[in-house]
Amino acid sequence: MSAACHVVIVGAGLGGLATAISLRKAGHDVTVLEQASEWREVGAGIQIPPNASRILRQWGLLEAIAARSIQPTAIVLRSYQTGEVLSTQNVVPHMQANYGAPFLVIHRADYHRILREAAAAAGAAIRLGATVAAIDFSAPAVQLATGERLAADAIIGADGERSACRDLLLQRADPVRPSGELVFRMLIPAAPIRRAPRLKALVEPAVITGWVGPGAHVVSYLLAKDDMFNVVLTRPDPHPDQPATGGPQPADLAELGLFLADWDPRLAALLDLAQATLKWTLLQLYEMPSWRHAEGRMMLLGDSAHACLPFLAQGAALAIEDAVVLGTLMAHLTPDAPPHPHPHPHTQLPSLLALYERLRRPRASIITHRSLATRDLVQMADGAGQQERDRCWTKRCRCQDQCGDRCQWPPWAEPFFQRYLYAYDGRAEAERAWAWAAREGVGGGGDGGGRNGMAGEREDRMVSLSTE
Image (cartoon, rainbow, N blue to C red; front, top):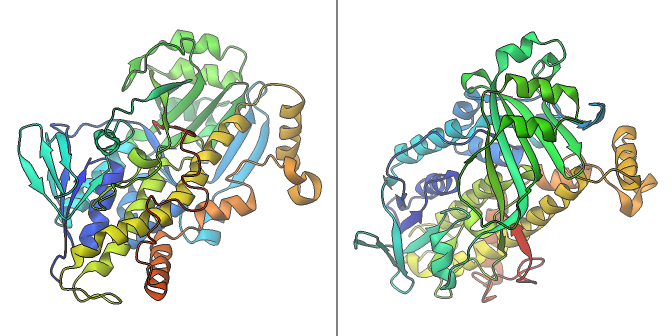
């Protein structure tokens, strides 16, 4: 089957590479533009929940991903002071048995490398040192900082939370803003943790462990890469009015130790084993009224469209979902593909991208805002509300019978929302949406801005960015 369209993807992060894989599998030519001049091993741990691992399996990548991953047996939440277990969510066998896909944790560098190699093997052209300076939305085409012009049938902006494509789409700068929180990351050798009697349970068996406290929380889990233990602390920024800075900043382990002085002693023991830590500023953006240009050939995807706080571990997963939905829809644009065969399939792109946005915006909005609510839940101040939350968690109450609207289960453990998160099948959703559009004859829905359901109702809602 010959390629129907040429798509330029701006950004070779997880979302951009996933989109390249998905569009190549759909039969389209793909060029990925990455402004970095070389690949660097960055980041630390990242979670791959079932809604993402299901897609990786569909692409034939799950075996390679699993070989570099750990499959935690449970998600355990502890009291910040005593270390008492407040909540345990089974992962193995629950996730595979109920959602048909595993819950994994992996080093971001391994995840990126596997997607990068898969995109190249599928035939995507990936160009490093390619900085986009301008976009001609009518052509469409991108102009690089070198002056080179690349024409395409569609342009996908997947260049992250500090998106140049987003600024060009809005025709103004849309700078990130400090959220008032810092994220500290440490990678600690797992061997001495295994030898320490009071720490061994953090790695044997492998579990995701969280400590929840007033205004702060800690998440930790074992990584396969170099047998390291990933520790992430989110806490208030003591200087919230300072300008936002990009990338990691030096951090002081002693300062971190003072902050955690009244927390579970196991955290102090972990800090004693750490050699260094880096910190990031959690940042904010306003939610956009639309992800796509009015002329219909340029679309934002992933963090550039719907950056998400890390508290549900869904930021990267949403980008993987975006990719499979877009690729599934665009598979119908090949000349011989029903139900809308067309000698020039690229003429259908505006309606297809409108359908894509109509399908993806509500879910992205719900998960983004539920992540914000999860921050408030896990960082609750000491007091009556926190005691009620802990009671709910430890008793595993039947929320409809006992809590009603006050239900405070962790969202990933609450049965209805857990299914909403993890049972999602982006490929199946896209096929249903395409069949519906064909049956109704509505194309992309003609909604002018992709507004649907919860999405786009209030343009001033704040969306936080993840350094997940």
